[in-house]
Length: 365
Ligand code: BG6
Image (spheres, protein in one colour):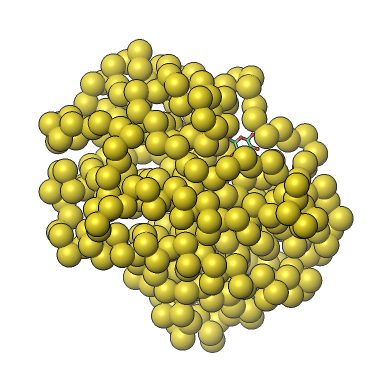
C-alpha cells in the first residue's frame, strides 16, 4: 500500500506530478480554463469587493500564497485568514465577498465553522476539498475538488500541491472575467500550468541532493526560514513541515523583518534557509542573507536557474529549482522543502507518517 516506499509521506511526495496533472488537465481545454463544476456568473465576479481565503495549517499556507498571486492578477483585496480566527474577528463579509475555504479532509471543525459563518453573513463559499462528499464539499456553494487521491501521512504534501494548483485556476478565471489580465499574460500562465506536472517531476530529481543536505544539517536545533512575497508564503509551509515531523524548532520570517528583532537569535552556526525563487526580489533577499551571514549564520539558499548567479557568493549550499512562470514558483519551491523535512526527520529517527500529538483531521474547535 505504500507503493514500495518506507513511508506514506514519501510516496505522496512522489505522487505530486500525477496528482497535479489530474487536478489541472480536466480543467484546461484548448488553452482556456474551464471550471464547469462551478457556475460563477460574470456579473457576480464583476461585483466582488473582496476575497477571504480560510483554512488551517498547510491549507492556510496555500491561502497565503494565493493572496499574493490573486491580488497581483485579480486586483481586489484578498486576505488569508486562519479558520479558527475568522469567526471571532468580525470579518467584513457580505454578498459581495467570496469566501474560499480550503481543506484536504473537508471535516476540519474550525474550517466548517468559518464556512457556516461566511454563509450566514451572506457570502458565497467556494471550497477546495480533497475528500469527495465531505461536509465542506457538500455545504459550500461551489466545490472544486483536488484530485489528489487519499492522503494518509499526517503532514500534507500532495493535497497542498493540488490546492495550490486550484488557486491558480480560480485566479485566472477571476482575472479574465474582471478584465485584469491581458490575453498574452493569460496564455503564458496557461502554458505554465501545462508545463507544471513535468516541472514537478524535474524538481523531484533533487531528492539525492536534498538527502545530502539533510545529512549535513539534521542535528541543528534551531532553523530560520526567510523569504519575501510568495517566497515568504513558502517559508511558512517549509517551516511547518520541518517542525511537524522532525521536532526541530524553526521560525518563518519575512526576510526584511528579521532585522527588526529576531536577528538577535542568529549566532555562529545557526542555519538560515533562504527561499529566493522570486527573481524580482532575489537581490533584496540577498541583502538579508548578508545581514545574517555576517552574524555567523550558515546559509542554505533555494533559488531558480535564473536566480543562481545572484546567490552563489552568499550561500554555503544551494538548491536550484527549474525556471517556470513566476506565479507558479511556489509549486516547485515547496518540493525540496518537503523532501528536506522528510530526510531530516528520517535521520532523526522520527515517526514520519504519524508525528506525536498530531491528527490528520481535527474535528474539534
Ligand atoms: C492539521 C493537519 O491538523 O489540519 C495539517 O495536521 C492540515 O496537516 C490541517 O493542513 C488542515 O486540515 P484539512 O483537512 O482541513 O486540510
